[in-house]
Structures are given as structure tokens and as C-alpha cells.
Length: 386
Image (cartoon, rainbow, N blue to C red; front, side, top):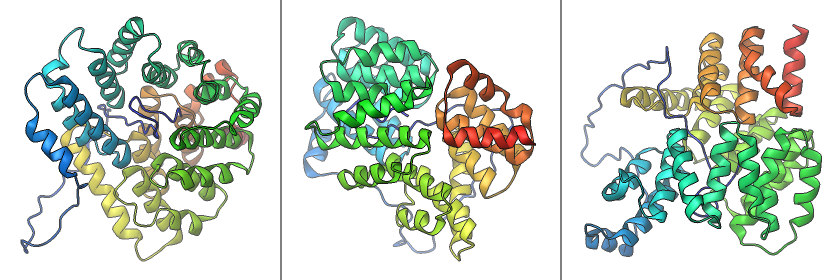
């Protein structure tokens, strides 16, 4: 995954906020606390300056609306809660439906549309932005994200290469594209050579995470060290933390993986992993965590926003052990986004369910792209052997 969002450098956690067939969740039960002092949920605190800016916000104040929307998008990236996307969109309501809004609004609108998987609309916004501002770094990077997710690798590469004046950013942007093209070793060598270049901590953490992903593709255990270095720079990077969990869990270091996510249940992508590891460990907290995840899935179904197809499929596969359902959700997810993690998930579900036909779209994608990935190759070999 391209680890860069449209506003600043951060882990880009893509959600699948689209309807999918045969995925109606149970309705969440209404809950009324008995004690008025009982804490139901906690929300991030807002500093006095932000609250003052909100009170002072007037109709047409584009600069303030953009800045406040960026803060909401930052919270979305941290907590993977789509309500923050809605708040960001509300702040931009004055310009949302304009065919040609101001460039800063256009970038944020594309970012929100990408997050809710309105990919054609996001791509149209980004193409318009880049036509007007070809040197817009965030615009090019966000376009590369959208193009990679939708398997338009030529467009992703074109956006990345416009950043050649900033070699570390260009190499990090290109890393997943090169990896999918079967050139993980070359991409790793180039990016690793550039890593000593002085850079902002956020950029360096992003580059380290990209290095780790290339190392995982090659089956190189150094991925763990890269991810720990990235988390030293940004302990709240949920994407890097989740990826390190995956590395440890894959190596059967389940206890270490679970400990890594302690007190981080507020991020859905980490909650599902914690539920999986505690279930595997048969811990006393396993049932509570599984219940929390089921409530998240039910609430999403009730809202109709169908978020986190990837996480839902993993939960069905590794906690509920409902292989047909896991395969269906993983297929729905693959129809929406085609990143390496999505390919791995569908093949893993197909292996568990003994359904080779379910993996056919990924097998065709692998043949077309020439991708070589140690995790994926091992699962495909198991599938073929059966």
C-alpha cells in the first residue's frame, strides 16, 4: 500500500465503504445506560484554537474550512472512523458540488472520495487538479494511491515519476508499483540507498514502511526491524503497527503480536487483529474483543456504509471460521480494491475453504502483473497442491 495520504504524510488506511451482496449484518441493539455518569465512548480532545476557529467559521471562509477539514481527515487516518470523513465533507459543503472548486478543496474532496471508494469521481478530481497544478505533490501522490488501488499501474508510475526532484519521495511512491511488477529487489535496493537522506520524520517513517513491505514480498525478516524503526518515529502509525502485527502473527509469534496492540482497540483495523490474536491464544479477553468487532460490523451494516471489507473478511476467516462467508467478503473486497493485501486475503480464504475457483481472479492478476510475493506464493502453492 502507498503509505501517504493527500494531506501530509501518514498511513493511508483504505476502507471499503460500498454496499456488497449477501452482507447484511445483524442490527445493533439499542443500549441505554443505567448510570448517567457511565462513559459510553471517548472522542479526541480538540484544543482551544480549533474550537475557536469552528465558532468563528463563516460562510465562504475557504481557508478556515480547509484547515479544519484537514484536522478531521487526520483523525480519520488515526482512528479509521468514517464519521470524521463526514465531518470533513460537512465543512466543505459550500463547495462540495461545484464542478470546479478551488484547488485545495478539490484535493480534499478527492481524498474523501477515495476513502469511501468513489474511485472514478476521486480520479476525475485528481486529474483536474493535476491539469491545473502539475507540481502539486499531494495531488500526484493521491493520484498514485487511487491508480494503484484500481490497478492502473501506468498512471500510478506517471504520477510518482513527476516527483523526481525529491528522490526519496519518488522512490517510496514507486515502491509498491515496482513490487507488483515483480521488481521488489530492485525497488528495495534503490529505496534503501536513499534512506540516509535527511528527511522529515513522517517521510522517513513512510519510507521505512515501504521498505518493510518490499522485504515482506521477498521473504526477508528485516521487515520487522524496518517497521519497529517506523514506529519509533510515529508510534500512532496504525498502518505500520498493523503490518508489524501481521509479520509477527505470520511467524507464529502470536503473544508478541497481541501485546503490540494493547490499548489500541479504538482503531478498527487494529481491533480486528487483536480479536484474532486473542482468539488464537484462547485468552480470557477473546470473547469481549470478538463481541466488540461484531458490534462494529453490525453498526456499519445498520448505517449501510459497509466499511472495512478487508477486516470483516479476516474476522470471518480467523475468528468465526466461516470460510464461505470469508471467501464472499474477500471477493467483494477484491472487486473494490486490488492491493497486495487484498490478493493475499482472497487466496488465504480460498485455501481455508478449499475453493480454488474463488482465487481465480487473483491468479489471473498475478499472471498479468508478474508479481512475486513470498506470502502469496506460499498460499498459492498450498492451493495448487490441494
